[in-house]
Length: 156
Image (cartoon, rainbow, N blue to C red; front, side, top):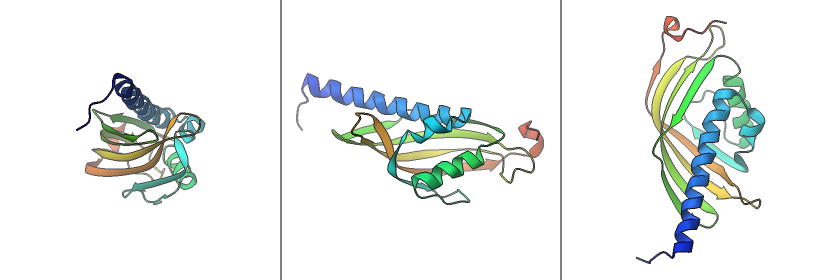
């Protein structure tokens, strides 16, 4: 085990906080439908694995289009809690984020209202501009429940 210098410890803690802020922006941008800001949170070579997705997006453009289409109407709330963030090196980090979400889709939208919880497992890259971005994201659900139509309160 190596002893970390004070400078190394500060750099590592700043990187961890930057990644926490990045994921917080992720959740806020989805819930407020801020698609331009959302798009800037990812590397161009993003790889996603959201097994529950009916559109099965893999790359950045497919993912952005799928998310915008899914959340075009209705309401959502997304929470990430107590992440385990590991700074691998100066340009790479990984994290596991316990998560909860509730999505209320209007009748006739083609999407199912649900709530659920699970984990995001992600990899991050510090880009040339010095900012961390998500380059891999996988969502693994522990539980997902469809909400009865009368429970959602969403109208078309």
